[in-house]
Amino acid sequence: VHRKLVEPLTAALTKSAELGWRPKTIGCFNPRMKRGATGISLHTFGAAVDVDAAANPLIERCPVGDPRRIAPASRDIPDDVIDIWRAEGWIWGGDFSGRYDPMHFQFASGC
View 1 (cartoon, rainbow, N blue to C red):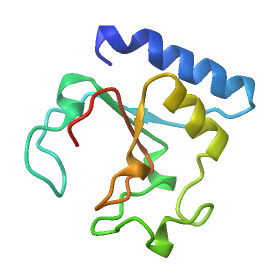
View 2: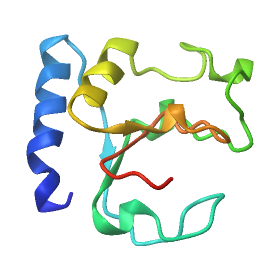
View 3: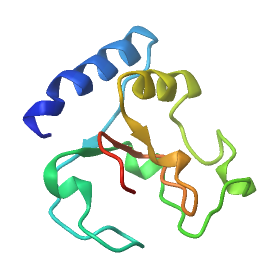
View 4: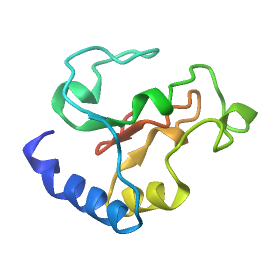
């Protein structure tokens, strides 16, 4: 992760653990283009993480209101954990309008 994001990542993970939730895997640095979009991925800069990717898969062409976005079938990250990450400044990929990326948290806008 980018050095400027160590503190907000640590805070989000610590507060999530206080609720009894801990991720099994976290992926971060991956120099590449965005999947399903144009531009360079924020993973290239260490400004995004994917949490428990196997249990929280990306669904492309999945607009807001699509029933595939309904938890727990679509993800295993609890709502209160997502709220913690948001409060620490992270943008959640489950809120993206044209695709549903519940594994993804980024610390920059522009997606």
